[in-house]
Length: 406
Image (cartoon, rainbow, N blue to C red; front, side):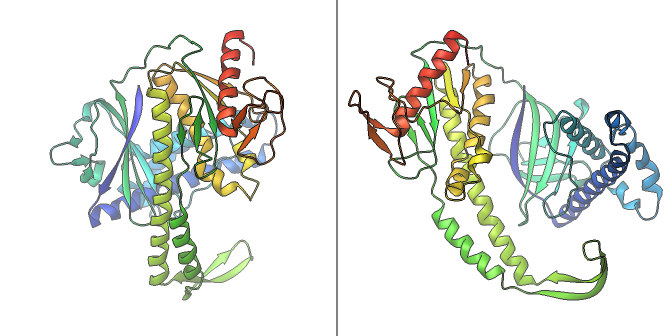
């Protein structure tokens, strides 16, 4: 099975310059191919537009040898030629998703957000890792220092080098490893676990509440948020200086002055990027802790979760920050593939199922308005709102699997 392993790398100054050229070259080719396709797409709107659009991999990529000979684009030959193959494949895959209505129209890349490139590794060149000296051979860049915090076994398929905005480099290695998926376990009522996802901080809330009473708290980012607020306020007061150059602006339809940020602006921007990356890593770590606990637990054979409209929930600005910190969409995504890995049955309960306001003892529906706990007026049972919802999700998931009805 193909799995990804991510490590931090420490390239030299020369290697950093080479990686910068690789990022720029693959960005340029993506934008070049996308512009050609968009011209044809805009001129042939209709039923046959899908057939008339050229393939980036098999048609537009043929222009690369002639582009490398031209004076203006001769710098493209400095990069590993095989990296352009993956870029063209990615663009073709993006258009396939677009025509299947699984995504929007592909967008142009810019150097602010898109700093990565991928090189495929053949079967004959598998000895690119030196575990003892902690280096990895990355094409023309040569041996790059890498921190291998864990090892893997298997055939390397591709390596992706990427850069964060604050001089942080990492490499992602796609491996066809020796991991075998576990056989799907037989569904039992005793082995079913229901999960209610939440975003409330504190003892009365949680990120994930299991029907057996286990609660995973929401990570608090108050310290990081306070720092970010202060630094962003300082950043807004930093100046940009005129370089004396002019460039044509499509927005204003005239030549405008080119401005460059000050050194203090760049330093402050890097500080902000570090804190934002720290928050993202803490959030990802917490999500993996929850999903790994559920998927690897031998006591569970079936996992029932609710399908949430996370995009719709984020439109509510009063709770959007907590929902983002809860990482609900990623929780569901990770549970899908991890349950597949470890042989767990995964059942999704409809978002309109009244898990919160239904009494898990007598089945009575009671309107719960912003209360963390409530007492059923029929049977008198005292409920923790989230735990009660998790139990109801478990029961509904068991019913769906047993009766085969959604």
